[in-house]
Length: 177
Image 1: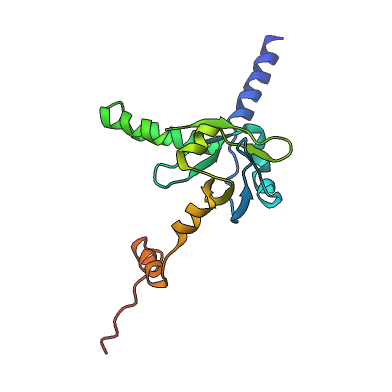
Image 2 (image 1 turned 45 degrees about the vertical axis):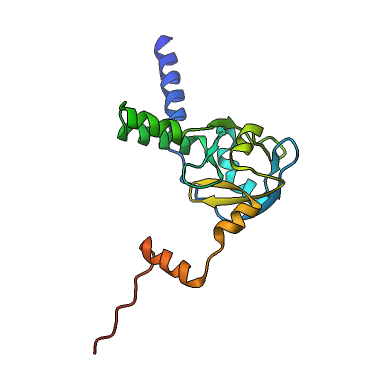
């Protein structure tokens, strides 16, 4: 019966557009990349990405930092929907979109838990053998170990100032009594 077929079709469409759980990745992982650009995900991180593995991932060079960013497909699709809702087709809008999505590739994590990073993408941020997988909310940053360590270097005063600047901490009020 055609009506029954339509019901199944509608059900399948609903399943594909179902809301996905918000997953915030945690932990910092030190790994090695082999000569082909494969990185074995540590078990703790693999367990976190398991709910999103079948849908795949997108990888790109970070717009802001010298690292790569790995997004679950559903998260990347949400980012692009937001970007397209905010930006139009002006020259500046197109320029931003072009730069923001530079190097974008769809990637998968294989059955053994390896992520294959395309060599041309690795070259965008000069990743060598030592790699850091650093979760950043709903995506994972992929850094060359030396660049990551250098990026984190700061004095206690610099860290305190940064916390004030991003409004994570409040400056103490001077006691005027």
